Image (cartoon, rainbow, N blue to C red; front, side, top):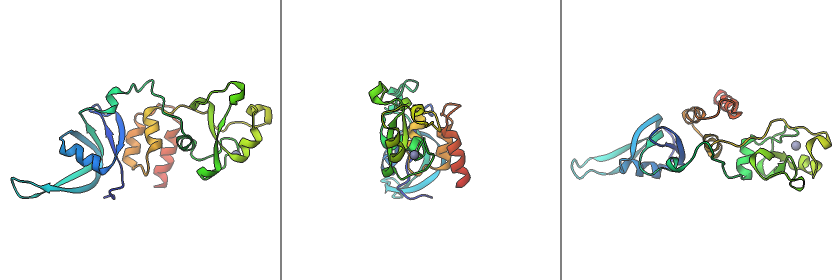
Length: 202
Ligand SMILES: [Zn+2]
C-alpha cells in the first residue's frame, strides 16, 4: 500500500495513457462509475460514504493504472503530432539532470538550457535543438556551435512523445506504471534504458 500522495495513471478506454491523477480524482472517477477496468497494483483503499441500503461503509480500492471512459483528454489528443511544452524542468528530466557536454550530474538550480545551434545563428527554441548544460559549459560555449569550441554532445536531443512526457512529469512513478508507459514509448526511446536502470536500482 502507498500513501495518498502517490499518483494514479489514468488511461482512456483503449489503454492509451492520459494523465496523472490524485487520489481525489481517482475516487471521483470510481464514484461516477467511469472506471472501466484497472491494471497494475492496488495502491490504496479509501473509505467512502455509508451506503443507504446496507448501512455499510463503502471501501474504494484504487489501482495504480485506471482505464476510464467519459470525456478524456486522450480523445482530443493527436498522439502522433503531439509536442509537449518545453520547460527547463522537463528538459532537465529528459536529460536525467546531466550536462550533455561534460557528463556531470547537477542539481536543477545549477543547470541551464543550451541551444545547440545558438538562437543568434537561427537555432530554434525547441526540443530538438536544446540540451541540458551546466552553467560552466554553457558559458564556455556561449554563442558558438559545439564543434567550434571543441565540445560534443553526449546524446542527441529529442522531442518526447506524449507517453514519454507523462513519464518525465511523473513523481515517484511506480514500477508497474513505468512498465506500462514504456509500452507506449517509441522502440528507440532513450528512456527505456533509464527505466531499466531505475528498476534495477529499486
Ligand atoms: Zn558541463
